[in-house]
Length: 276
Image 1: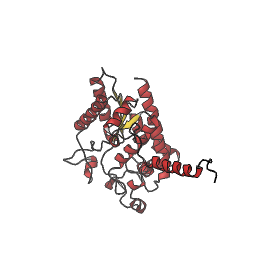
Image 2: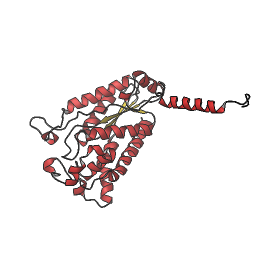
Image 3: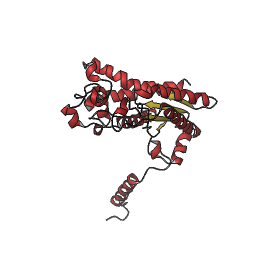
Image 4: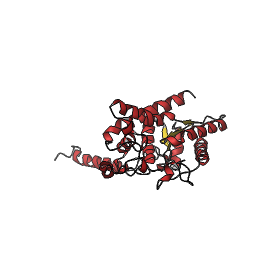
C-alpha cells in the first residue's frame, strides 16, 4: 500500500460517525425546537422575541360534550394543532397553551352543554379576565400581537370584548390583541358552505357534532372520534348532543376544511398586523 495515499476509507467512516452524532444531538440552544411556548425554555422564548418572533397565538378550545362518538377535548386538540400549523406558516409566531376552560352554559341549573357529563363551564366574566391577563403577560414579555384563535362559537363575543379592553388599557404601548373572527368563520361557515356545494344537506352537515364537525376532527386526529360508534349510528341525535348526521364523515372530507382554516387565518393575521 502506498503510504503517501490519504486514508480515504478511514476518513469516510469517521465522517459518517460524526454525522450520526450530529443527528442524535439536540438542536442548539439558539434555535427554538418548537413553535409551542410550553415546550421552550425561558431563554429560548426571550431569544425568539429578540429575533423578531413577536406574534403569539392563543388557541382557545373548550371541554364539552360532542355526542357519544367524539371526545370532550375535540376543540382543544383542534385549536392546538391548527395554531401550530398557522404559526409555522407565519414564520414569526409562537403558540400559547390551549385555554380549555370556557363558558359552556349555566352550571346550576344545568343548561346548554352542561346538561351532558364531562362538560366544564366557567362564567363569561372569568373567561374574559383570563384572556386579558394572558394578553398582558405576553405583552410584558415583548410580544406585540396577541391573537385569540377561538375554536368554539359560544365565546366569540367574549373574545372580542377581552381584546377591546386589553387594547384600551395598553393603547400607549406597541402591543395589540386581535380576536380573529376569520379563524372561527372558516370552520363554522366556510367549510359547511363548501360541503353544501358538494351536495351535502344542511340537516346532515349540522351545527354541532354533525358531518362538518366530525370530518374536521377526523382530519386533525382520528383518535378524537369513536369510529365504531359513528358507523353503528346509534344515539347520534339531538337527545345525545348531536345536531346533524356525522355518519358519512371521513378524514378526507375534512382535510380541505382544515387547510382552508389555516390559509384564511394566516392571511387574516397578516392583514391585522399590517394595518395597525
